[in-house]
Length: 166
Image (cartoon, rainbow, N blue to C red; front, side, top):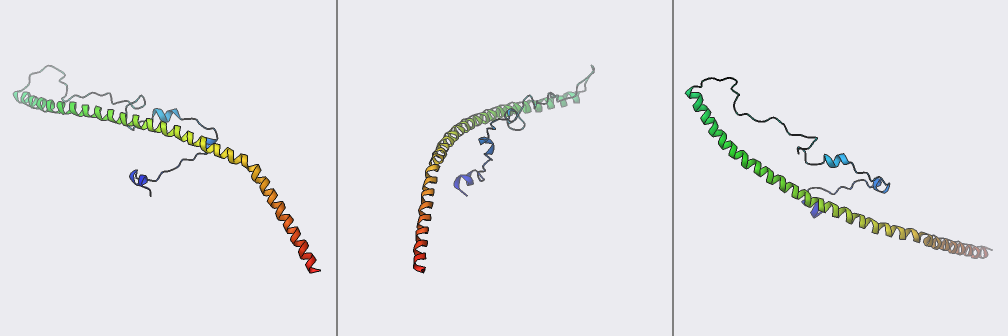
């Protein structure tokens, strides 16, 4: 296993390239649209629209006891701390999302460069293939000439052998 294979934790797997040469160059747009990280919000995956409510709704006017008021005050103070933590947490999630997007941007540039360079290499290899194909008649002629020389040599050897047998 090579160094890069060890680093990237796996062997490089080659996809079947038969479709590329066949002219089947369609790209599935659905894979691009839904190809983001699982769980990302999109028109196909909307957020849960339900808001939050930390306490039950009081559906009619009433007096409250001193204990209820104290409990609500304590709960509000807990919520104030949780609100601050939620603000920081969501800000960090936004920063992480931005980093993720930057990494995808870097990968996108790499993937486009890789594809362009792959096309250049394929063109060079195709050029070699065309050259080799153009040489085939020459090799066929050489083969024919060698076969004729071999046949002639065999005939001469047989003629000599026949004269020696007589």
